[in-house]
Each structure stands twice: as C-alpha cells, then as structure tokens.
Length: 101
Image (cartoon, rainbow, N blue to C red; front, side, top):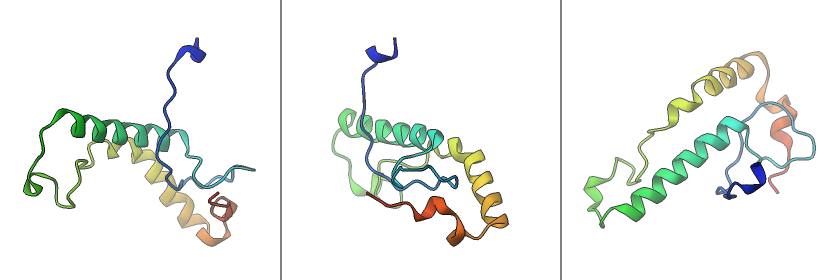
C-alpha cells in the first residue's frame, strides 16, 4: 500500500515547469523535478553523514557536496523547457505568474 510508504519533505525550490497548475504555488514541483530534488538531497545527506570532515579543496568548485551526479535526469525536461520558451514568451506563460507562497 502506498499509505505505508514513509513520507519525506523536500526543501522548497521554485519550479521551472511551464504548464500552469491551477491553485498551486510555484514551489510545487513537476514529477521529474521532485525526483531530481529527492536524489540531490539524499546524495547530500548521505555525503554529510557518511564522511569525515573534508578539507574545502576536496569539494567541487563551488564548495558543495553535490557535483551534478543526477542532472541527467532533467535532460528531457530541459529539452522541452527550451522548446516551450522558444515558442512562447516566458513572461506570458501563466505558470510563472503563480504565487511563491
């Protein structure tokens, strides 16, 4: 049963999804955005919990424990994002006018 699965709460992140979702704030993520965010947060939490304190030079160039390992999950999302924004003006899309609350 799905109700038996543990629940996780992701950090808030503004969605880049182009389709308007009536009544939802901008931080309601598209499914692939949520899967990506979950993988990133799980990766960072496991890195922080499983490794001794590292010297700053051992982190990637921006000092983060995450170096883009899961970004390929967003390949088709990025493709469609680019296509939509080539066809439509970003400022005219209702999805980006949703509140951030």
